[in-house]
Image (tube, rainbow, N blue to C red; front, side, top):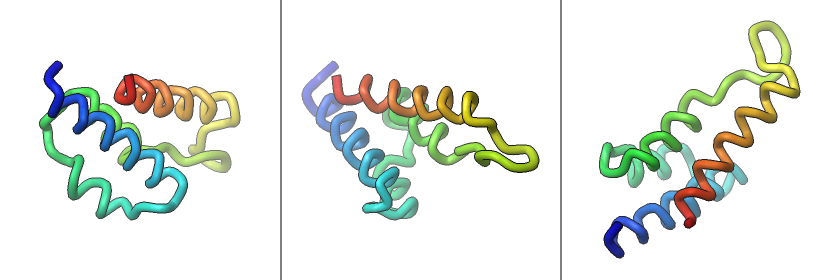
Length: 81
């Protein structure tokens, strides 16, 4: 992977963490990282965009929610590597 792709992935991971902490809007995140430039970044965008409902009717139970969160974290860590 070239240096530009590595920087793009690192920025995407940092932006995703900021979005998940509520420090960046979805619009701000998707404006920069919504394109198909990188498959792993696209996977992350898809995971975040299709965040499942937690609890209640048709929502994920705590175990399934933890699996979803672990997958998001796994992709972010892969982008940071």
